[in-house]
Image 1 (cartoon, rainbow, N blue to C red):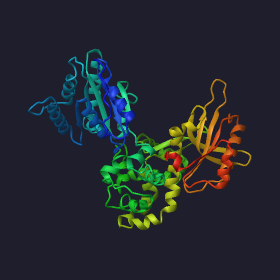
Image 2: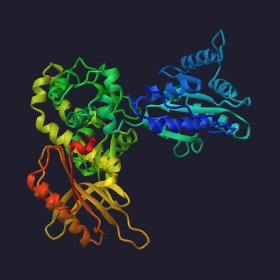
Image 3: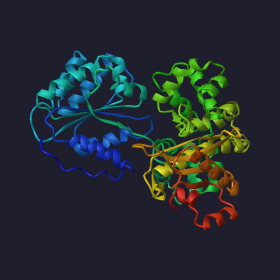
Image 4: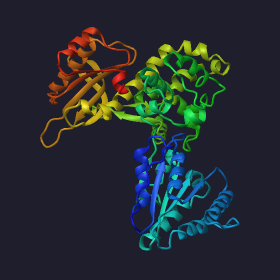
Length: 495
């Protein structure tokens, strides 16, 4: 096949530049054999929207599976294939073996144009017909020796199922040329998508609740967006906290939709433990009244489902903590679940008024720390005069006083070739606190302690991140040009 000119991303597809480029490169790769791609991502991320736009741009066949029996799924597939090839009557395949053989046969004749095939919600089909991955593997292998224009994309929202397609001894392991995870918008792109990029304070609060999930604005809320920071409280009461809103039960649905989750009560308890600040394995186990060994499976499933993330302590080997990735679930566990009965009875305004401290400490604060780390990985990279290194958080322990200093944002370059590990940045992030000299002193002490461990801190910048502002004394200290960075919401959002 000849290389075709890549088509530009359609204007109606917001952001997703890297995803679009990756997909079009996969479709247009001039190789004369069949290729397989895996596209996954949690629900509401816009995967179907993106893939339909891809099919519209390149032509090809799109099939969206539904929860159905094997017989009905095969009937639906045969009908869709018939429409694609222009048959006046639906095809009646006896088995999935026949259907997959016919599908790959469509791409067998030589030609210049690739045949793009998208099978969406593939886990539904794999559940009804477990032999499907093996059948696809057989055809992929067959058309490595024979010419084929097939460009097959399997897409799904059940993260554990999709991840398992290429794992260990799975039939399709080693067969895919593309593995794309469609993730939520970053915090800046999300603010742009919601139209609040010019109001950083509003954008930060909005992102702490609904994150970067595109479906929440259009499909769920029909473009109901708070127009200003002053409207945020009324907005959250009529949307997320209202039993009449689709967002009200969304956090529960996100958990229930994962195929590997059976005992939802246990998983909600694990997430509630993390939301309440019990972020270590031992802390989570103690909160829910289980032994640490008994929660290994729930933790692994939540990680595989991209709902929970295990973050290693950047300064202490073997230490780690867990963080809820999906903001809406964290908001639900911290604010909504403890007052569920009252919210169902329509007391949203009262519950929200009494949740200010909980929202700041358990939702907005931890979320702000994660946003600050995302900033350093992205637009804030220019603040560092050296290689980026590993970005994370951790605890620096003063052995003499047995005091621990929490570092919310750290950039560390591992040592190699005889060089010592280098610390490029130490930062503290505060959501509702005006930061002052005491915060800078704590970072300075952490830097000195790390130097005493033998780490290179010669080029280490100290950064104060605050959503509430900085004291005059801290600003004067920074003005002396001593390498201290003050980063507020305006800087985070590029305003």
